[in-house]
Image: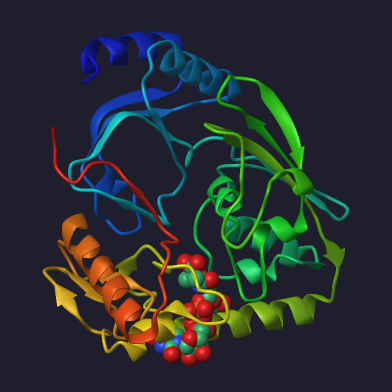
Length: 306
Ligand code: EPU
């Protein structure tokens, strides 16, 4: 247990951004689920990021990096230590020729919209993918049409030792819905190189993907997107449906009736209820199809407070 008040005061004295204590993570995740973050820091700039990481290193305080919380299940007991909230920092976005440079806190939807406006093609696979650029890169977010790292040139990050580093695409260790960034890294900036395309084609692709997504996914209800990674050669949603689990409910949480790889928060769901559904789906899919489903979402925090 860290001494919340004194650390808050000290950190607040050291950085320009805000420092909050006992901040409910339910207010910061798409799922609208999650206990409190012991301390939540909003760095205002790069120096703040470095300072926070240094304090955390010196005092052995765990740090969780939070983007927009779109791919996250925060457990009911909350998160001990520091949560670095990057949803309101590093918001610059600029295009120059076929290159787009942006801060890690920019929403992927804004980057996609800007690229389309400039008739640049490549990022259409991000249509409907929520979240910040930093979070999307870390998890190599995408759809069947491609993932974010495919068109990335380089990223700038601060590593766990506080050093600024530039990594090119090939240095990210990117795979299906994952990267292998240095431990404790905070992505600050990214640069994409796209191709010139036809504005009408780009707009048509984006609208087609949006229509399809709205038809097949429970976009109107709170969730964390797809819960599981697709196993090689199959689809998690199909397997969960085949196991007869669509619509299964536990308290306020439900395996979506629309898409088997989504769990929705019908109102007041707890993380424990979501975890129960996750374990049930894993067990049934293992029994019925012999497939071990792997989580795509990041599960953080403790199940119970204390
Ligand atoms: N399917 C079923 N039952 C279901 C759901 C799907 O049989 O309940 C079948 C569909 O009929 C289709 C196949 O499974 O034949 C694939 O379904 P879908 O096209 O919906 O795509 P997905 O593989 O389930 C992936 C991404 C989504 C992304 C969509 C759209 C993963 C784990 N999921 O879903 O990403 O939006 O493609 O391109 O890669 C996310 O990452 O959070 C996410 C939602």
